[in-house]
Amino acid sequence: ATVEQQCKSFGWTEADGMTPVGGWLALQALGYSVEPMTRPAGRITLKRFIPTLDRERTYIIDVNSHWFCIRAGKLFDKALTSSRTEVIAFFAVSSSSAEEAAS
Image 1 (tube, helix red, strand yellow):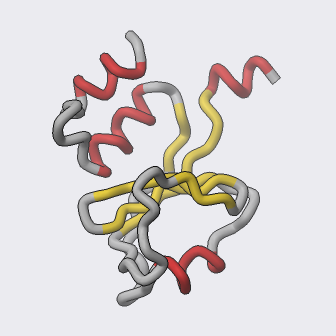
Image 2: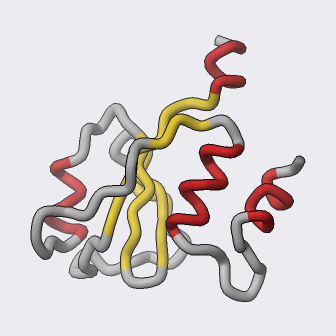
């Protein structure tokens, strides 16, 4: 199955995207190792949250009906989310088994 087909099976639509839980399930189905989704301890903004992350890891960050990736300390976000936005949840992602076998 293609990535798009896999994501559609977990609720992705072009109009609405998908939920963070759907994304978590799709990544797992695609062979990635994903840690449990976690909520920060208390309210925290992106500005305060991002420096607490391990710069060697990859994370998916959930903020108010939008989610994006931070990989090796670099933010990948087409929506240019404000640093004052509250972090709702996050999870770490590791390489897929296919990528590990190729290394």
